Amino acid sequence: MNQTNYYQVNLNANQLYEVYQTELPKVRVYLDAEIAFVRDRLRGTECVLELGAGYGRIMKELAPFCSFIYGIEISEGSAVFGSEYLHSQGAANTHMVIMDAHNIKPNVFDTGFNIVLCMQNALSSMKVEPLSYISKIMSMLCNEGRAYISTYSEKFWEHRLEWFQEQASKGLLGKIDLWQTKNGTIVCEDGFKSITHSREQLEEMGELCGYPYEIHEVNESSIFLVISKIHRE
Ligand SMILES: C[S@@+](CC[C@H](N)C(=O)[O-])C[C@H]1O[C@@H](n2cnc3c(N)ncnc32)[C@H](O)[C@@H]1O
Image 1 (cartoon, rainbow, N blue to C red):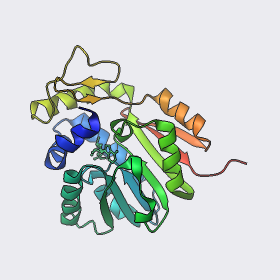
Image 2 (image 1 turned 180 degrees about the horizontal axis):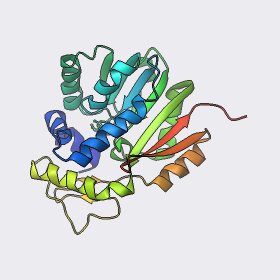
Image 3 (image 1 turned 90 degrees about the vertical axis):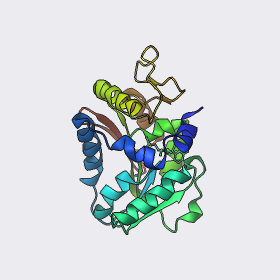
């Protein structure tokens, strides 16, 4: 089973919510720091799009700091759960759309975006060819808009593994296959596989995308590729 299917069939809605209800302090700090990195760079006026938005965890946190935030999510279960979650949290300036990020229909949105997000390793879970995907992301941005793409830092490996073991112990994932789990890839006995992109791979994407970019390591737990839609002279 590929990973997209896993998120659609197994790890969606309430199960996905449970993934993020972690008891592990380092993981909680990682998740908060990743959101804070973007939040601290918002002015309050931006129209934001999150790709692979899950149940709206990040949307809810960023909504008070931007004008409007849309989320695209392939899993109908997560998107429906997410719409209810966002409503219950009073996040009125949000809207969750059931859509495959491989096949974004721009006419659904009546605006270009100032910010496009693909966070918490969602780029890996989408199984895309990164460069063509980044060019799609850039086409959704207004001039001078920014894309934020984040993956795990290699320094966070032990904590990431501990988090996945916690998920397996809650029955959200199959047992971790410790023999095959290495070099940034977590493999479960039920076929689930979580890969990630390294800092070097993000740098390469930045070099090849044709726009100015920056790489930031946050809290020794996530790595951000930030691309600005500014045309080089
Ligand atoms: C690791 S989760 C992250 C969820 C959310 N960004 C968060 O941090 O709370 C990745 C999400 O991407 C979604 N996803 C995977 N492939 C997708 C695709 N092709 N289009 C839209 N969403 C997708 C999955 O269903 C899953 O909810």
